[in-house]
Image 1 (cartoon, rainbow over the protein chains, first blue to last red):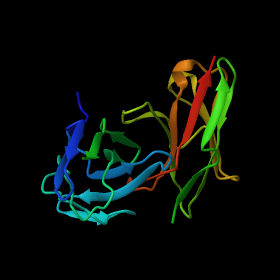
Image 2: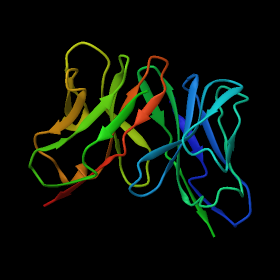
Image 3: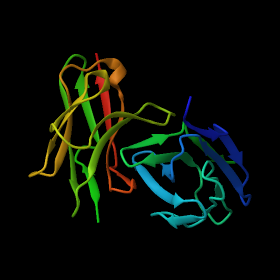
Length: 110
Length: 112
């Protein structure tokens, strides 16, 4: 079945460490996105990519980095510069008429 | 620029009562409109979408929405809710190339 796979589902990070969240899709979509979700704040866009080797900052890109070396993959790195990284992270891909979401990664800083 | 406003952050409703979730959008160009549902600790699932044609759109789980171009609205309705409809609901728009903009979400809490 086609879909989006995010891994891991739960992730714990020590303060000061970088961590990378994985997102893979087999839907052959050009566009991919990373969102952050905090209680009561909806979905906030971190980064998005319309095509391989190209990506743009979203509304809250500071402290995050991404790469898009393959169409299927759009990993997100949460760097030590992100001051409040504990959140639920959602990856999505889209075609013109629909967006598809992964099941999310819950990141906790310990 | 496009934006999406969900007018209610939380909607309490009794089981078997009707519910309406309000969504307004602004855009200088034609958009596609969507409603998604999110259950706790999960990703978002598509409920329904409006691309063109009939302004009344029917989706899964008994939900429907009506596109009103003059009022730039896309309100979601269900005539009789179940406990299992307790979730967060997101309205979204997309431009022609597919970039999505989401509203802040509406939490629906269904009580017996």
